[in-house]
Image (cartoon, rainbow, N blue to C red; front, side):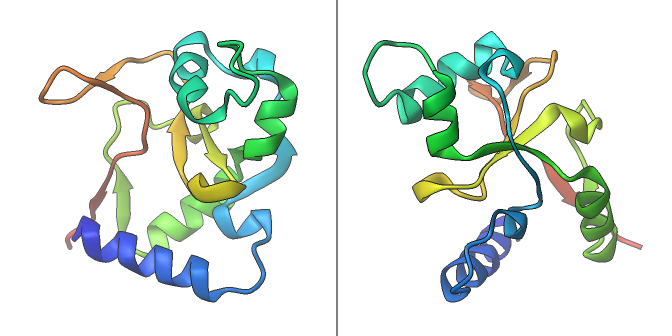
Length: 133
């Protein structure tokens, strides 16, 4: 089911000639580096640290197009497609989305909780489940 969802999203993203930021459910405002929690910033250094200084600057955040989610739009879409948040933190204000580059559309967790997978690896994504009625 997850693979099918990913394929649908990727097809939509690549077939859409208009790569506007709102296609990814963002609020349209670049996040300031001071708003990104230390753990997430450390994880993002691997993909966003262009000058190799082991820090994530405002310019690098702008290059990734990191923005908060437009929570009303996302909640409407989740209900429409019958998805529920499965993540422990249901506050969508704690999630951000990358809107530029090859990671565009990636939703990341920027909140206080720590999510660990079955292999004891830290992850920062959004976890969803189908709402079966």
